[in-house]
Image (tube, rainbow, N blue to C red; front, side, top):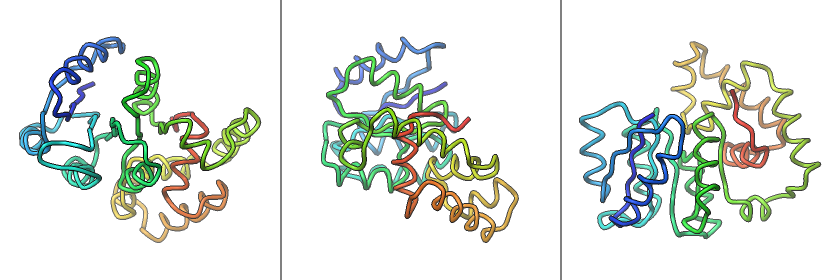
Length: 213
């Protein structure tokens, strides 16, 4: 696995590189100090699997940097790693195609577990964000997992692409089905999960805490 860290603090990047070596197998890690250098690297390399992106860079602030990288590397997992804890900002990041949001106040174990889950096809959001959106008791978790398990294999495949921020056209091409069929699958998925849109479906998957493998 190859990970790109985009953060303008040298000491933080160095600490992250060291921490990520705890993953097995240890990933190859590339560092960028701003959005411009990250874009330049990505133009020259197409082997990045995961991007860890800070929202406050010297040349970009806010969700726009996520949207820019999402267009440039549509197949990579993008995870926001930020000191920001505003639920509205987190919601916009998920809506923009991020597969996870980890606050910089998270422990080392929380971060590593979040990355493992995301790489396996899951979604990670802070517990306080999930608590604010809906209940998180054990019974709810069990019910959520059961609902995900009730989806057909084809629906789970569509949902997995959805969690990666893929638009309907891309899902249609990748699955060799029509866009109308994609929309039909999405309608069935939303109905089963009780979600009104993609973002709510992502929050549901994060609350369930299981990868869509």
